[in-house]
Image (tube, rainbow, N blue to C red):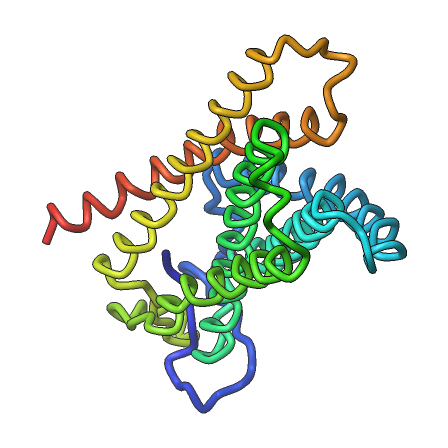
Length: 263
């Protein structure tokens, strides 16, 4: 995971890095263009949808059930993730060199949002499993403990994102046209390996409770129309997240392994 920064940390202005006098956009590969289209489409569809959910649930959040609070927190974390994507996309496509502190702040916010999103989904899978299949156990979790659980997933995301603060500078990249000198900021392979281990563990927990929930619902022989609507929605959300989130984790794991073997 890397970002570009200006060579002088005291310089707070923004620079556009060029390659042999041409903008970065002229050297984009097809995969990066496709990624930009996907990100733009996700933002255009996801931001209004999540904002609408937050506005509707926020009016009746006081005294609401755990299910409503989970929907609200999931929409909020999704919205924060989607708001971070256009900023990162602009920095990447424009080749902008940012000062050190701003780079670290943007990177930390992005990792925090993504990690919190995953943490909330893990909590959703556990909560739905116990509420649907073991309601007698879930009744024991009172409102105070529910608030503690929701607060914990956000704090865990803030803690896990800390490696972004310890990004180190790599070799400087000098521009042939006399432009600014940019450094690549990257997380140490050891810290990134620890982060990926946490993500993989979270995915395993999410997948395990997803299977238990699906099998439990089928075992109860409850007709599909009589299943709680929230349960069906959460099952679909988790299924989509498991499918779409597997490939980025796999590619990042492959990259980190290559760093270790190359060193």
